[in-house]
Amino acid sequence: MRPARAGPDFVERLQVADPFIEMRTGPGRGYPVFHVVERRGWIRIELRRTDWYQVRTETAAGGAVGWVHRSQLETTLTEAGQGKTFRDLLVDDFLGRRVEFGIAWGRLRAEPLLKVFTGVRLGETLGIEATVGQVQGAFSGSDLWHVALVSEPWSHQRLSPFISVGFGRFRNVPNSSLVQAQTVNANLGHAGVGLRWYLSERFVARLDWSLYASFVSDERSLEYRATTAGISFFF
Image (tube, rainbow, N blue to C red; front, side, top):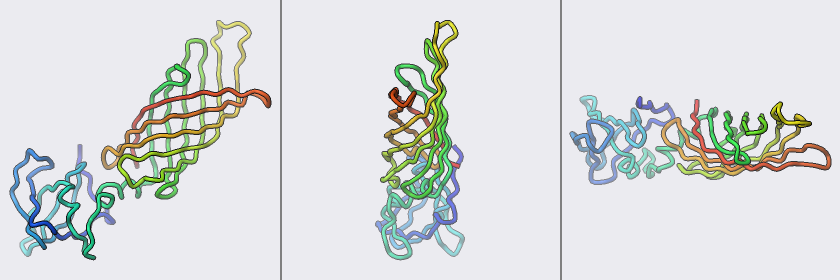
């Protein structure tokens, strides 16, 4: 995976607070330690690969460059003298990104469901998402779309639950072999809960459970439950 370059709001000077931190030649514990930064030394973050960060020491000769694990950086101090937190290092990049695109697979009423979705983050805990899905059953095929408001109260956590509610349209087309079967076009209500797991700088795994209500007529509505798992990425 190509290392991610930290954005301008992410890079800052950090001071070592522990007796020392170890710098390795590569992003992994299998790489040897080649340099040690002692307490009160200053470093700058340059690149990131998952939980490993490429840092540069501050010296008159230009500094040594190596890789440090996130767990060591959590004990460093900012220029204001405050501790650098897990959220600061790992999740701020997600909160700064606005557009997400993904694909998911699952089941709707025991039939296979494929859906694609895209979302826009309106704030740290609120976003809007549009979804298009298709179900190919044994006796009919269904298409659906919906737009939903998404609330993610704990978006600063790497494992983050969310809820969504929205509306859309539902269309069910029976197989031509069925007698007197009619195509159904109806408004659709949607409510869902889910869980996001931030895998890396851009990629997110997610699990969704959805309840759909198809308003066939003023007196009749149909309910469908769906469970999907998928992956998405941020632009």
